[in-house]
Image (cartoon, rainbow, N blue to C red; front, side, top):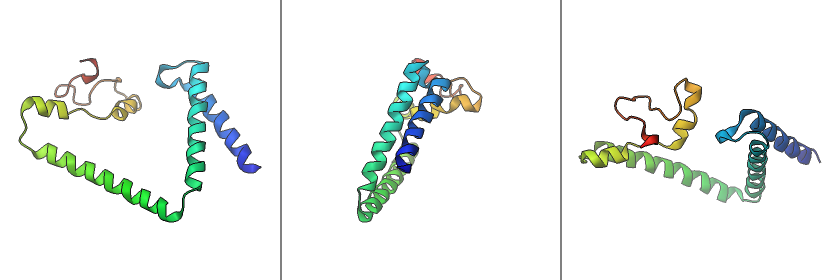
Amino acid sequence: MDLILLRILFVALLAVICYVLHPFGLTGWMGAEVGAASAAAVIVFELRVRALTLRRLIGAVVGSVLGIFGAFLFCLVLKTAPLSTQIRRCCNLRPASHDVCRPFGGRKQGRSAESGRAGNYLQR
């Protein structure tokens, strides 16, 4: 019973936070609906993880860490490879999560930290 109340509180809290903070430019009830849907997705994920055995869970963690390490090595190879200017410019794109956190850093959203070198790649 306590866990059900905690989940309901989590859904309500995330809905209120999204109603106030306007995620992705959504205002009012649309933001609250997105927050409630996100909370529901987290709860469903939590229920699925509870059903896993410890062996599968450890395997998933090891696989995730190896995947991140492989992506890191891939980026190192691309960074040091002798590529043409056009290909290098194409590989210079950063993940979208970098721009989501940018307003907290004080810069305008969509602007690069090194605006002289990379430019405003979101408006190309």
